[in-house]
Length: 268
Image: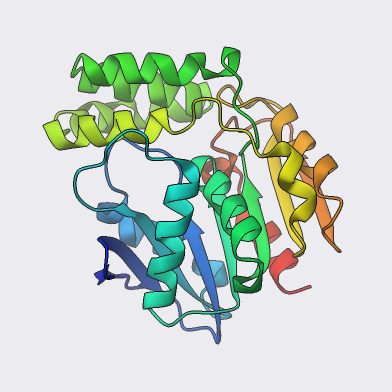
């Protein structure tokens, strides 16, 4: 399946996105924190979501382009993503957000409830404590040192199960050599946005059907983060929680039945 990479330009910024699928309904995907843009992986993403492509037209949004300045909050990212969605003429969309993308998705559901038909949250959290920020502090340190290989290696070790990481480690080392000065600077700002992020008490205001998928072996945010989200979604008319026992933080990339679970919830 071919993915189309394009740029949407609003009155305030430009944002890259890729589009694939031919379904009548629209699914917005918001990926997590990464050292570089995910747009070069558009074809891989299209293949990963192939199961959904008959029923949905899928839009994967990057963060806005250009220089980012601290503070650039999760709420700021959510508002920018909404602006891009509306610029493309989309409405009543389903949103799947993974990791930091899930935080952005929750902020969208809180701030723009009329825009979101269904919400799907993978390996994410509604609260990053100072103690829980240690993983990101290490990534920020490596980025400030301009240590691309160290950043990619530590990122991979934390995000993926050990056996999976061993199969992709060589590729990560090669990709790490392409990290630019701008990539490092943007990554630092995007990672800093997680510091003291906390919308847990606002979650009961989310009113759309929501699927929460976590992993008990999440070494980045912890499995309990997904359980906390589900417990606070008291305003959702249909809230489901599914916890993998394995696959690590990147269950959304590693669990073989992940997209099946997404599709089942979307078609309910």
